[in-house]
Each structure stands twice: as structure tokens, then as C-alpha cells.
Figure 1 (cartoon, rainbow, N blue to C red):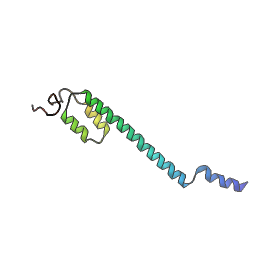
Figure 2 (cartoon, one colour):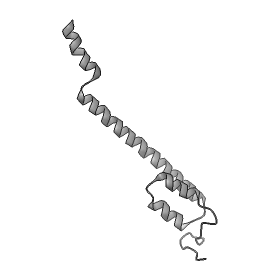
Figure 3 (cartoon, rainbow, N blue to C red):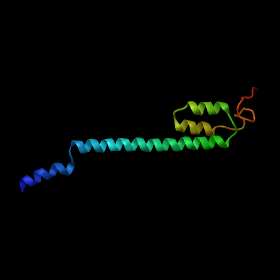
Figure 4 (tube, rainbow, N blue to C red):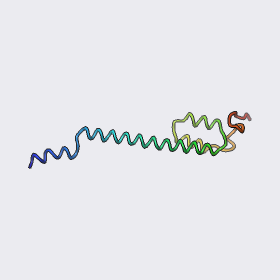
Length: 95
């Protein structure tokens, strides 16, 4: 009976391979979840920017940022007074 107990205890807690596999699955899952959240924020920023008047400076700042939170905040900050483009949104109007 003692020998049987010694064999089952290591299997109960798992070996090194199982622990490494669990760590890798956890890291991959965290990266996947982060990626999905970032995509959602970038999509929300694009929707928010599309609702506002064209602003070439804001669009350049959004395209140059790597943070989805910053992109969303830039899109939220676009107002009629900050947008200074022609009616087609291509050429900035010089004031």
C-alpha cells in the first residue's frame, strides 16, 4: 500500500511537462485576449472618428499611434473646431 501511494502523489500534482504546458497555454490565452481587446478598441476609435468631421491631423495621429486607448481618445477629441479640411477631407484649409 505504501508503494501505491508514492506512485500516485507525483501524478496528482503533474510533472514538469504539464506545468510548462499550462504556463504556455496561459500566456497564449492572455495574448489572444489582449489582441481581441485591442481590436475592439481600434474598431471603436474608427467608428468614433467616422462620426466626426474630417480632421487630417487627427487621422495622422491615430495612424501613428500604437496604443488603442490613445487612438480612441484622439477620436473622441475631434470636434468641428479642430477639423480644418475641405469638404472632401483631403486638403487642409490654411487659416
